[in-house]
Image (cartoon, rainbow, N blue to C red; front, side, top):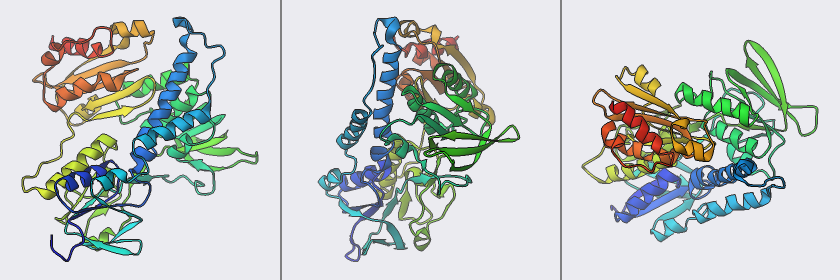
Length: 457
């Protein structure tokens, strides 16, 4: 390292992408600095994946116990203690390392707390300090996008993270946005007894998934959880009601403007890449979709790479961690690898859960990719009988060479059931290889064997 630089590499952001990049670089022998403007560990550990998963597991368990009479479980006096659940949420985050920089310091990474801003392509200001390096990786994540809804600043709207941190579940809640985060929150609060309304501007919930997914989840919401589902509904304003502690949501549906009063409003309206760090001073290009990178995760400035939510695309901790390591590896090596998302899994943690890997049928049609498919209901496997649960399906797609190219599963353990399909997609296995793999006949993964067997024929 030249003496004019303070560090070999500076990583901005300590979330999944930044943490994996910094640790990889430090292990490779680079003098590495890590800058974090919020809580150490980023959103995955502090606000989203870990804490939300802990609470969702609590709510799913409570709902199952409520419905356990048919299995011989007496639930007439069943109740929950929400402060205890919140303590559990906090504990799981702390155990995962949320808010702590110990893991980074143990890896001999210099840690800086504060907002980072580029002064030049090689200099970064952090509070009252200026640090420099010949290489940078930007992993600043994303921030909530409130869209064009008026009144969000003057009304007590909650972010998804804030909604999960309340001292008690709201009696009534209106969730704006029917994507993955929105339906997870709707499911969660309804399982705990809240009266839930969810609004989505598209014609169905989970619009990025195939049509069967959104319709299946909506039907389950309406019939089993009594959630009011408002599709093709654009929320245009939120405002305070004259009633104490009540908010009003104004939305447009079917050409008419309507209002709903609720105790709590949650904005699950998606996010925008966080790009406010003086990128112009470094010569890094970006737009509303995020920092512009090539297939090696390199920006237009050859010594600056970017990874995670700040470059746009699908958001997941697994994907961000993969990009962080890839960016660090490419930054340090002459033999660079292009990014590949084959086999990554997109999960919606409802009950039943949703897991998708590879291409959806809609994507195959849109890209004119020849495919064959099979769709099987949950009733096809014995697990549906032993669990007494029939809401869901598997859709498996293969190309003209019978290679597995995509799958969607809706069932109580979809992320586990789809894991072997992700392996098949990433390594270009055929449906014959998938179907010939032994499966436990009494589990949900039997769906994969049956579906792939039908495609073999």
